[in-house]
Length: 346
Image (cartoon, rainbow, N blue to C red):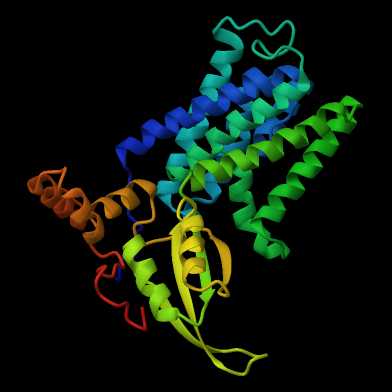
């Protein structure tokens, strides 16, 4: 009989350290800022807060009851590694929610033990801190809320995107919370906390080094390409195109840089061709190139141009060692030597 192949679990021990930290951070933001002021987090976390207000059960109990079944249902679709990471983080989140509320002697008499009864402060900082926890969870391979799993499983069947499904769930949650508590004051502040939390999640996932792509149309494509390759130490892609209005052949340069380099790119292009047309777009993710800021610094440090300038003050042995280490780190990345002209195809 043919044996069915099972997906292998691929755990990294240091991920559990960061996932533990993520669960603690999320519990800190929700329990010490949102819940004491009657504010609601998004997803099952917010649902747990609401249920704990209308029942004698603790919020941490509902976190387990609501999240675990949906994560287990998504085991086959989302993979064992993701589900284990997620269940581990939810367990940490639930445990520290209980510790912060019932064991550690925080004073919740006047609302938040840190921000008091100021709902604006609690919604902003609660959203930021819980968003950091959620983003950290996603960055290290898991999810901290079962609604995301629910969305992956049913959004396509309902004809909506995962993001739209989660948003609809939260709108329904905040509406029900307003009807149950007979006041929409807290749910409206909760919307603010949710919006702030989304930005914090994006920041944790994308970080400082968010990439940008640039399309450059210029009459001096060879000179611009050579200069960009010299400065940034990586290749470009050149496309043949035709201008509709001018009915003339054009060359379009495509280059991906990080956000720290985009202004320098514009300056380089403008200094060569003041009439160049540049379009800049956000890049969600990159793979196979060195765009992180630390690696960009290494590239510049080891470029042939800088090597001549630094040779007078830095021993050649140090430069050679740094270059060797950088080449190993960038093995397989798309680079073009600074003295060579980039090929038309890449």
